[in-house]
Image 1 (cartoon, helix red, strand yellow):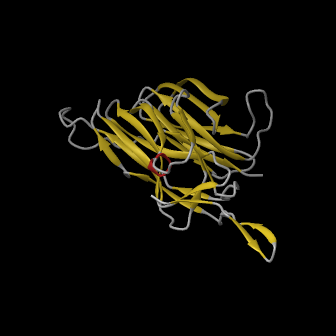
Image 2 (image 1 turned 90 degrees about the horizontal axis):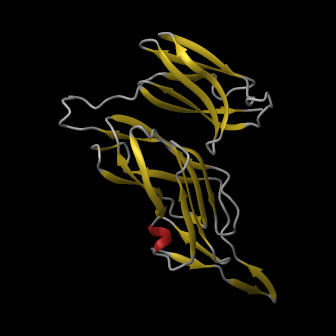
Image 3 (image 1 turned 180 degrees about the horizontal axis):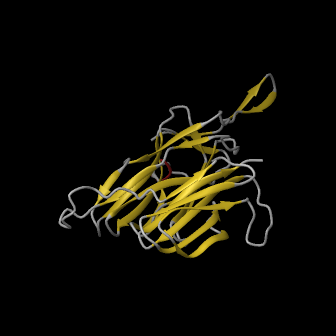
Length: 264
């Protein structure tokens, strides 16, 4: 584990503060990728930074998942933080259904971490047979100088929950019930819901912090393809800012969440 303190250099009598400046992007990854657990089994999903030249002071992420498939148990700062010897402010908030918010910050004003290593971890437990996407709806990383990287790359992954004694021969596939187009969109997007049979549907749009913006459908929907539109406004008709939003579909068959982006 590598760590480093910022130092003050004196050049020709003029004080110059050397700082670690954020580059154009930082690459993160979930590990293990596309893992499988059994119902009731506990496991861990970590977020790693692999860039050798990446320096980190802060990580702040919002991650979505299907809580009918897995249950959040907790989480915290990864080994890169915990083994650094620095004072770290950290936490995880998982009181919003289907979402957790994790953060870790090196508190020393002249301290930062260097990759590679584990930045954050999430502990979860398998709930029922199914497949849930794990999506970083929002991710921020600050460098040693306190500025945020303008781009954080963190690809989605999946968690499969499968009971080998259930009599199911193959891993259940995630249902393809929900599709959005265009995406990104401006000024409106179409949300296609496909149901194998008529049933109760709850379709809503949330901001990336998990607050419900508007309910597009709450009632019985017929089988086949149904189209709903969102024009970028909340339930009071107020236009929302450009950015990322989550569309959540709840049916008798389960829950599916997809990410959409509004541009202006």
